[in-house]
Length: 233
Image 1 (cartoon, rainbow, N blue to C red):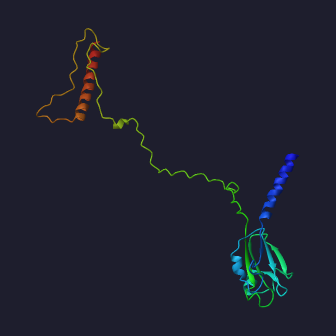
Image 2 (image 1 turned 90 degrees about the horizontal axis):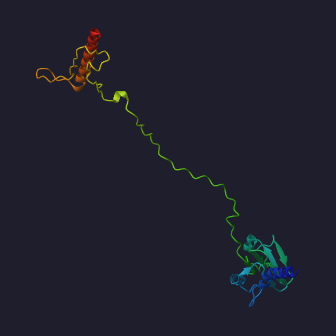
Image 3 (image 1 turned 120 degrees about the vertical axis):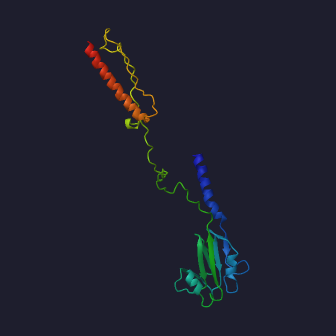
């Protein structure tokens, strides 16, 4: 309970601090007042009014205090007065920041300079809105970088049979002893070579043509040798 009482007293003291800092301003004072001989606007420009301050208008019975709008203040009109006083000792608290306009309602006095514009400032600057209190829109996903399209790399595979160079099949020389149809009594004969020595009078064949001719000759000789072996058996 003792701690609670201390906290309540501290809270009350904090609330009373702004009230103790409030300032009472006698309009036009200390060397003048609410009359036609005082430069009231010059006096107001030399002051700094804060929320909580108090204006005190002291004046004779021939004057009054009328609060008006900005337009009526400029034209010295009281037909649309916000409020008016004529007690000779008017107290007006400045409870909110902004501008307020006061004139004397006696005819001709406002035009003679009996008017004042009061600008009230806030006692403290209101804290700026915290960024965390501001609702944030959902973050849009970052745009993916555009990857320049490129044609797929050609697949490298084994060459097709048409792309392979023509090469004649390699045939080992066949002898009568290696053939299944050979007989110990059959005469042995060697297979003639398929290569032909170049002749000066005969035209030279291209490698592909020579290969084809050699291959045909080998098949012919082999076939003849097979028939010979079958005859001997």
